[in-house]
Image (cartoon, rainbow over all chains, first blue to last red; front, top):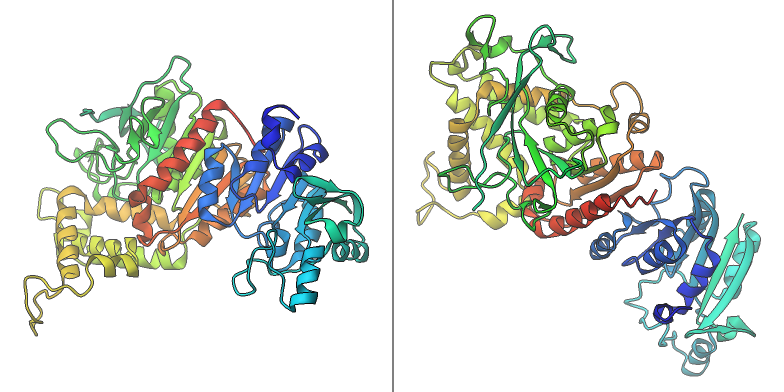
Length: 199
Length: 374
């Protein structure tokens, strides 16, 4: 990584490596567009973002991005088959209403799909449930049950099962803890999981 | 203070008349227009903006001796959304109008009298066809952007689909691709208000008493549709006019009544009733998908799009903008869209300056750099 590259988030670094140069990318739940901007600058991608938060749209536009102000659940139907080389769902899948439908739709409009999920079965969360008898609140999962934006709670293992049951091929998986790759037992030690998928 | 003068371009003199969508020919045709900023050497920084129903060519800056600037002065000027230090902005009036362009109040060269109802029906397509002559006259091959709100947005969309080679990008604000039954119904009520005024005289009132009551009433109806329940309540509430208590008679009690009366009365001074009828009709006839699917219509477009709508706009509701965005996406076009949270109703497109300034200036900067994200 270059000098400037040092400040790039670790999950973004992995995604940038996965995405081929010059690809057409759709980032679902693109937030303020940091990842899209990196993909455009570092990989020469053509990117479109989808984002529901109005304020984030202004940030994306300020970065010179193309962005659509729409719910992820409704935002995919308009695109033709294999319109994009990559569809990215990083840290957004757990907030959608119909994750199965969204992933399958993402695999329809994209040749490959990149999914990033928080691991709700990290060892610290498991210990909180076991010893405290409470739904876990950790640095990585900071929300209380009454104010969490997360609608879905899953582990890396759950996600692998999901892919298997839906005929989705996992081309690559990276478990991440902080800014490090988790080598062994990611379902226990990774805070997030990144997946490169194909169908 | 920037001073600007309205200019006029006349084209389509017989035998090269403008062939209207109705099949009738019109010529010669005059268009009033204004320009702001400087056209660069390779003529690549031109932006055309279009006005809404009752607007005119005077979009920005000041006319000599006048205290009020043009209708979109908040968005057009040095350092503003449409930055006249960078771009050459053109605003053209429409045919059928009464602000210096050929319309029902113009003199029919064949009779020497005002056209009145003998003026042919014009469509949004016809308005744009006339504007193309103006752009050709100015020697501009490609417009960096075409943009407008409400009826102005319709013109921008027609530019993008009828003359795709001329259009690099589109900013469509609070607009739609077809007028719905509700919109047509509201227009019909306004038309009946004018045509029911005895002074209307079948449109032949020039040089006589104008149908002021009917036109004022039509405008009052219009103003209600431009606001939202919330914005009216915030602006007027139930405030009484210089009264302690209700009058228990039919004189005006409430401020909102006075406001509408003032707006209506003001309007008849500056707008021709027949023009109002003709332009309303052109809106009713507007349906881009009349001859097929909307997706197919946009297949002709090659521009980059920015589509802006507002949450409380019930006259041009945001679902209509979303329909448009879907058709654009289905054609693999580069489209950004936003639904701005605003309580100002349809008026929001003129009122919500801060957010739109950011969106438009950033979008135009990208267009000028030629960065595509398709």
